[in-house]
Length: 171
Image 1 (cartoon, rainbow, N blue to C red):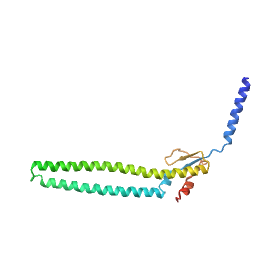
Image 2 (spheres, rainbow, N blue to C red):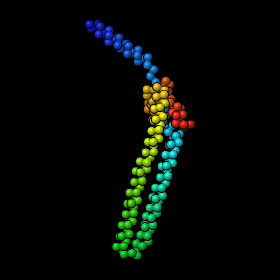
Image 3 (tube, one colour):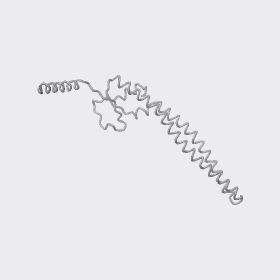
Image 4 (tube, one colour):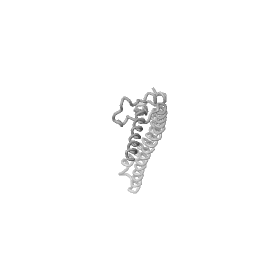
C-alpha cells in the first residue's frame, strides 16, 4: 500500500512538472518613466501645474511687496511716532508676516496635491495601456524596470514599451 501511494505521489509530481514545463510562461518589462515623460498628458499636467504655481507666485510676490512697504514705513517713522502707534504698526507687520508664511504653507500643500492628482490621471492611462498590451500578449507579469527593480531582465522577458507607446499614440 505504501508503494502504491509512493508511486501515485511520484506520478503526480512528474505530471505536475511536465505540465509546468509545457506552459509558456511569458514575462514582460517596461521603463514607465521613459514613456510617461513622452505622453502629452504629462506635458499638459506640467503646464497646468505651472499656471497655478505662477498665480500663487504672483500673489506671494504681492504679499511680500506689501510687507516690505510696511517694514520701510516702520523704519522711517520709528523715531517720530508715538509708542502706541508704533506698537500697532509693528503688530500689523508681524501679522502680515504670519499670513505670508501661512499662505506659503497652504500653497505648497495645494501644489503637491494638484501635482499628485494630475499625475494620478497620467499614470492611470499608462497602467491601462500596459494592462491592455499585457493581456493581448498573454503575459503573466510585467515588471517596471525604471526603478531598477528587478535588477535583471532576461532577453526572454518581452519589452512591451514600444507596444504601450503605440497604444498611447506616443512616439
